[in-house]
Length: 117
Length: 114
Image (cartoon, rainbow over all chains, first blue to last red; front, side, top):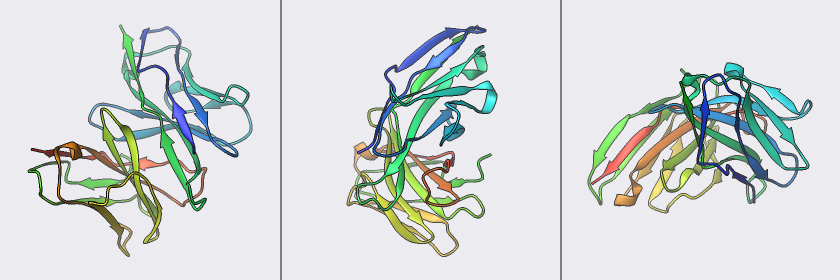
């Protein structure tokens, strides 16, 4: 079975400072990894994904994520945080379901990012 | 705007009742996924349809059912509602059923069971 862990319920960072939101995963086979962001009263929005190739993936709004196979991690990063980045961030992995018939995205529990002015 | 439309946005009903949530996927997307989001359980996968057929099932209760119609819109039916069914229900779509595609989410239907 596949799983995603986001060890921090909340991350606090000052505006202008770098931010990291952590994610580790467990999946059989190749990991296909995603980050989504959810603003209040909105649906999840896709930020970026890792499928293959370069371990550093760049996405929307200046976010990037680093895939580390040995540590089974896919941490989300941004060099300089903005107050408007404050939101709920979800890491997800896609792997085969129990019957092997479909690829089901499994989400972490989410990390609330709070950027202070 | 993700292109995924969910109705209703808010729904308040009583225990024991039945409700239907509706989802229209992005134009051209064949896969529809339903998720339940609650504070204690996070985002839980319920069920997936691909081009009208059920493709995968997750933690979906027997009181819940879903279908995808020929025009690709989907409905999630929740019956014999309990207080614990109060949650935000998301529909998401993707172009196919491959493992590399990202999902596009609607804004959700917030169900409150009193």
